[in-house]
Image (cartoon, rainbow, N blue to C red; front, top):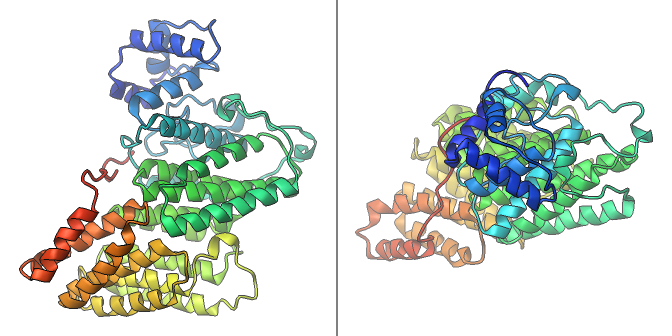
Length: 496
């Protein structure tokens, strides 16, 4: 007991509309349903949790997480409720404060527990058809400040780790998974499954396979409860990082923004625990791309500073180039044309300097020359909102991207067409804009990507000045038909 209020629990409790007595009764009922009929709590104990910072013993934190998840319709973990005991791993800066809402960074055993707990709650929401729209995104500066020192150091493996059968992790996080050893063949199969999921996401968008990826990640979290030999443990952390990035990207693709951000943070933790700091940096760059998409480029730049500085010396030039393109997109969103051009110039130099003599990791193989041009097109198209002359350069890069796109990258092609059409509208070329916009519309029904709808809405805005043209008026009507009737509300607002 800290003697101070648990503000995180208090804030979430306030959103539920429950009284303290009602919460006590719900805890007892839910605990009995989870196999703990002996548990009995009351109003005074709930008051101590909220007002005095008392942390109840297991299974109460799990019970509370399940109750809050169902009530609020989004994933709520015991970390979110401020009910994690930190004494065993040492105090962490501002663990309960608003500047570090998730108590970052987590110790290795907490990473595995958070991973498993969060995916379990996410799957529960999927089963019940609920949507996670009520949470807020953490500010880029909050994540960067909390994780900076941790990401810049290598993970410390204890000398007796190889002799222990399992990590002494919080059992609450493992969703009753029976920890057991696995071998290299099982990890081979897991790594192949990541490639299958990644290819599906690139072709069809995140909506159709998200639950499968989250379920696979949940299983891997349970596997991490067992301490394997270091070479296997590192590979398993790598699988966890790759799946968490995919789960985050798919969540972002369908509009579950706070959920996506949490997965990116989990991915960064998993990658770092596996000794792959470049992968951790790439995971954070995904969170930055998410921020630019949501209209928060300043947060994106904060995250990109952390992603670049914390990626270590092993990052390949092509990966550095990819990070620069994201930074350039954020700069373009802020109208910083000179900085954007300089950053894209650095990206081009880095990209061509990569001779391919060192094999790229699997998670970088999607970033090829087509993607390089696609990101340049997006940056210049974004800058064109501030500098209309940039639209011509955006068109050139978008056309090059389309020429280079290989099969199976349908979503990327749609984005290229939308960038190209939007740039044509800005450049006062409605005839060409109409042509490319219709090519995008033809393909949109084949994907489940909300991001394509968001970009389409941006393009629709640009058609307004040409509404008097019969052809463009027809296009506007087709766009309206293609967009969902009740678009999801993006989580853009409150910082926590």
